[in-house]
Length: 325
Ligand SMILES: Nc1ncnc2c1ncn2[C@@H]1O[C@H](COP(=O)(O)OP(=O)(O)OP(=O)(O)O)[C@@H](O)[C@H]1O
Ligand code: SF4
Ligand SMILES: [Mg+2]
Image 1: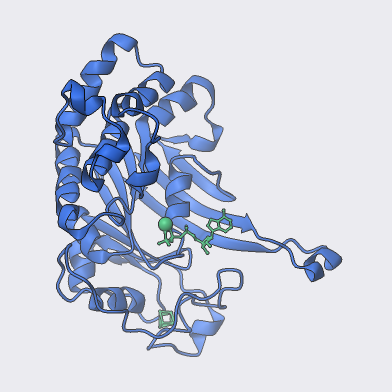
Image 2: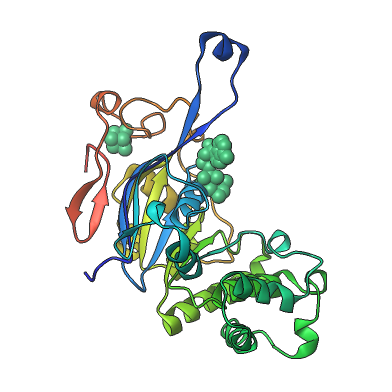
């Protein structure tokens, strides 16, 4: 494998949560662990899917990767350099190279800005010379298959459809010619009829530009459509990692098995069955001892409560965190 573009080690995020009167009296500062000891590498040009139920920590992980929020513990190396130590010109360069594509295109754009202004803003912030702006915008609009004539660029967000807005949001990330994007549920707010179009644009952009991407979704069918490799997260921790095809055809972790069973027909415009496991995610403020999945696992054994299963290499580019694998 080539030198990773991103290397994540021991990444953990804890949020302070509100204190009860009892906490105040006893001087406690309760915390919630949203991301727990995550390790992975991302090669240049690689597209990595991150999949898991709502609340498992996907967005928190994505926000740390582009330095929108700091980690509580652990490191993120970008091209070998710790992003928490970057400042000045180095940080500006990182912020240009690493971009976020927002989940909700209806919120992502300022309703009072024309499309042209929304696309110019990041170029200005990144101090790209003014004479390059229009060329960069035309290039990005072409990549997302949007017309760049004057009347389109002078329109406002409310005049566009959801699919067009999400293409503008993607173009806004691409004007900076990034090496890495985090796409957080980029189609979940869109009508199913336009989802495939946006996913195809993402695939084309990746193939044309060679950018690396983390594609976050609760939906394995979408991840399968876009990503060669996938990580499954459960309650903040990585439970499985491997080539997407292997994970879908032969999931090893009991939680991934449940996710795969909920996607019987892997089409992006198909509704899914509910997860074939009982209950929901446990309370992240008070995770189960041992294996975090044990409350819902059909294969649970006595040692699952006592020992945390480590994420282990099981060959074939796969890692799994389960005592039985
Ligand atoms: N700023 C915050 N303060 C306190 N808790 C937070 C904060 N942001 C997220 N959390 C909690 O961290 C956990 C992970 O949240 P996160 O948004 O990362 O999950 P997610 O996998 O992206 O979920 P979804 O699929 O619903 O978007 C949840 O328990 C959430 O309530
Ligand atoms: S470690 Fe135990 S509880 Fe956890 S997934 Fe494996 S069998 Fe299930
Ligand atoms: Mg999220």
